[in-house]
Image (cartoon, rainbow, N blue to C red; front, side):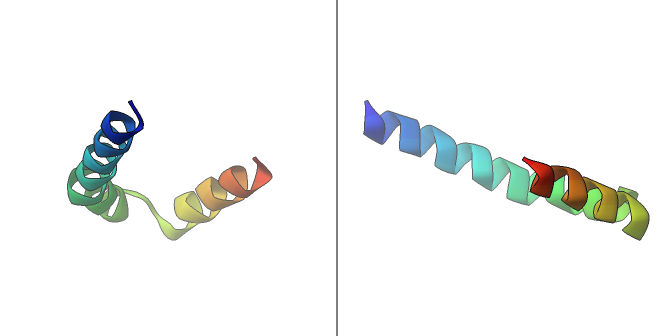
Length: 43
């Protein structure tokens, strides 16, 4: 079960790295990124 979980997580992370993060880098301003980072650090 853990092997399946980790494989699924690796695919998810690879998708984010390939598709989500490059698009976010293009669309978000420095201020947007700063705010997002602050929100994530609050968790």
